[in-house]
Amino acid sequence: MDPTLTLLGALMLVISIVLSPLSSRVGMPVLLIFLIVGMMMGEDGPGGIEFNDFELAFVIANLALGVILLDGGMRTRSETFRVGLKPALVLATLGVAMTAAGAAVVAWWVFDLHWLTALLIGAIISSTDAAAVFSLLQGRGLHLNERVSATLEIESGSNDPMAIFLTLMLVTLIGNTGDQAGWAALTMLVKQFGIGGIAGILGGFAVVELANRIRLTPSLYPLLVAAAGISVFSATNALGGSGFLAIYLTGVVIGNRHVRMMPMILQVHDGLAWLAQLCLFLMLGLLVNPSDLIPLAGGGLVLALALIFVIRPLTVMLTLWPFAFNRRELIFISWVGLRGAVPIVLALFPIIADLPEAQLVFHAAFFIVLVSLLVQGTTMAPLARKLRLEVPAGEDPYRRLPLDAPAAGDHELMLFPLRGKSWETPRRLSQLRFPENTAVAGVFRNRVCLQPKGDLEVASGDMVAMFATPGVLPELGKALSGRHAPKYLAERAFFGDFVLNGDALLGDVEQVYGIEFDELPPELSLAECFTRRTKGHPVVGDIVTLGPVTLVARATSADQVTKVGLKMDSSQNS
Image: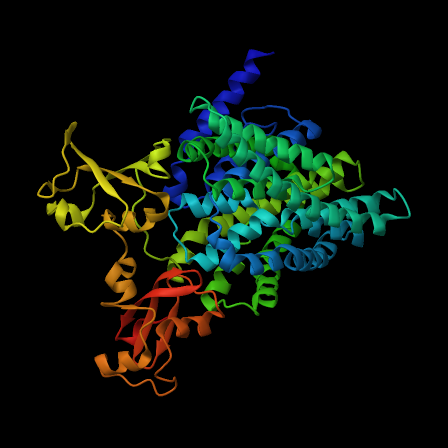
């Protein structure tokens, strides 16, 4: 092996990682930085690396996407399916088909292509990209309301089968490989979704059982999960199913079951996912020469802008209208139609099949991904904050260590650093309100461990060690949070000065606060008001305005609002 190649490859990784802090400073998606570094190291750039092995790139890209989807699936809570599954599946199927059709019309017009080739371009760019969505949602510190985040995450993780089906069907039709193309396409669709879904769920349960039944060195559990996930991915592809859907569902099952050493697994897989994204986008950048993109820049820009400003919003409005999304949520979901690695990977199919216009299809897909990351990726976080779709979030623990002892159950040791203005004034431990079934293990101050006595005062700079279960982490994080949130995300500003139980009746609220709700019966509970507003799926941050009062959902459980914030000033409602 030429040591120069390994040196250049390692330098590309180093350069990309070193430049990644620019993402938060200039608002540029970190994935776009990786892509640009790859292009700069290619034939047209100072690196001068010649890389045109599309088959090798296809294999590497598929494995990298598998790792990314496995990690994203493990971080998707099953509770999110309660509010996001139905709308996400509609977007992942009907929405993909509508996007492909709309993009095909524009591609046929701007590139003067045969209609089948135009449809192929539409199919390739029809799906949103899980790597881009997961990266931007998790990496920008956005804590969106559950309805929006769940829909976006599930959509991006499950819409690949439909895009793959459309792409392979059109590749087959253009290649004229047989007269039974229509029947073969339908069979392919059923196999992609059917085999992919079944294999993913069964594979997930199998991985959970395997990890829990055998005793390994702790550092081997993350590798076991990664290897088993790739096995499910590869086996599903071999059977004709969607490996992307299978490995995503495998991750969902693993992430929502009790798995030994799960915090360590998530920590290691976070690094693996970043490595996969680095290698994927650097490699895809190497495949393209900027000079090849210039001839189609005009038409590509028209197609990309049409996709962003017309096709995606129209698709979202037409498919999500039956669900309980408000105007602000629909605007944001319309905007976050991020294209990333998947369209570029799908654009490799025509090249491998040696179809006419294959290079044009590939370069058009690449150009659209660039525009999408640049336009949508850089504006996603500011738009979410402008639309006020964020909800208050607690502090995440600095470190989570599983106890891995039968008597401890699911308890973990969690370390929380105390920081921010709220901890500048010392407070006694006995004054802090912690969730049930938790305990203070110790307090660290200046490298000294202090016994957690009730009269011990803690302040900014201390680190509190807690024994707790993952289920109480959000509540525990809020109790120990000291982060400086924007004014509108401060607890009292967001939820109001008064906290009521969800089962409180409107009649009782009228008597206590001297308010009249003429339009609703007094025997209606506050929780039922939210159920009517959201069609049965309320989430934290939902708003119901009743005359001069604004109700804000503060806590939910099993499709019921359990805690309600009350604001007397209705002008704060957007």
